[in-house]
Every structure is written in C-alpha cells, then in structure tokens.
Length: 215
Image (tube, rainbow, N blue to C red):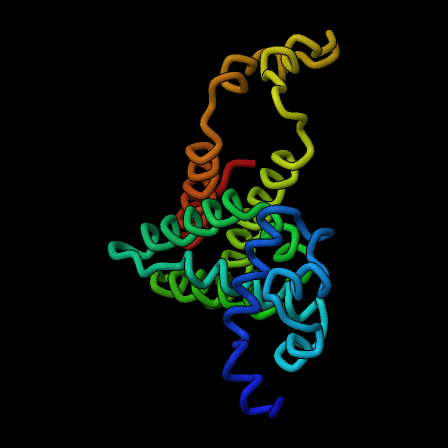
C-alpha cells in the first residue's frame, strides 16, 4: 500500500479517538499498539506512521480531551478562570486517566496551554507582573492536583463503598475529621472544587490590592 493511501485511510485523529475510547474503558495499562490495532482493524505499522510511541499517543489523547473541553466563557476574568477550571475538572472526571497524564508531565503542551489560558486572565485581573507567575501557578497546581486526586480516588475506591462506613472508621485521634463528618458525608466534589478556586482568587485579589495580611 502506498504511503499516501495509508495516511488517507487512517488519520491521526482517528487513532487518537480510538485511543481515548480504550483509555476510558481500560485505563493506561489497557492501551497498547496491539489493542489499538485491533480496535482500528489495521496493522501496527499503519499506526506508527502517525504516532511514534505510546508516550506521544498518550499526550495526543490528553490534548484532544482537554482541548475539546475548553470552551470560551464570557464574563469577568475571574468568571473565565472558574469556567476554565470546572471544564478541566469535568473532563478529568469523565476521563480519569487525563488527570494522571497532566500531573505527570507538567511541561507537556496540554498543561502549558491551560497555564497560558489562566495566565492571560491573571493579567486581565490586574495582578502585578511580579506576582503573575505565582498566582497562575497556584491556580494551575490546585486545578491539576484536585482533578488528579479525584480521578485517583474514583479508580481506587471499591465499587459500593459507602461514605458512612468510611466515616465511622475514624479513630478518636481524628477530632477534626469527626467535626466535619457531616460535610464529608454530603458535600459535592464539584462545588467544593469551585470553593477552592474562589478562595485562591480571593487571596490573589487581596494580595494584589496591597492590603496587609494578618499573621
């Protein structure tokens, strides 16, 4: 088969789409060039024509999921940051493997793209230049950290596990956990995530205004 025919018959986009489907169903361990070849009904050589290795494929799949999730949101810079944050959170919630991929390689294009989007809004907020990097980094690290943590919990907790069973197992040495057991039992992960974003944004606003902080 001629190279031109091969690239027309099997596009990089179709390969990435199939990889996402496999990752959603079986996780990273389930994605091999053998399983991908079977899903696409083609040989591994045709896939290598478009993707050099598994690392490149994982990066491309992560990029595809996040880019499709990032829609332009109107409103203030703070509202746009909230919109971006919840888009990433929801994307990782739907595709748990994405959180691990983004946290594993902080310098990969997808993560840098999200960082750029956050940074532009930080500039729009009027944050002083000297504080922009730290402000954007705090938001990025929180977004990726919480998303990855929730994804890991979703994959590690046995099906049918009840929050009440976990809470009643707290020992007497966990007074704080016992004091917030009600919130732990009934809280909404998405709302809690956005509450954290709001806390960071409030801190950025206070810091940028020059208001002295209490020790």
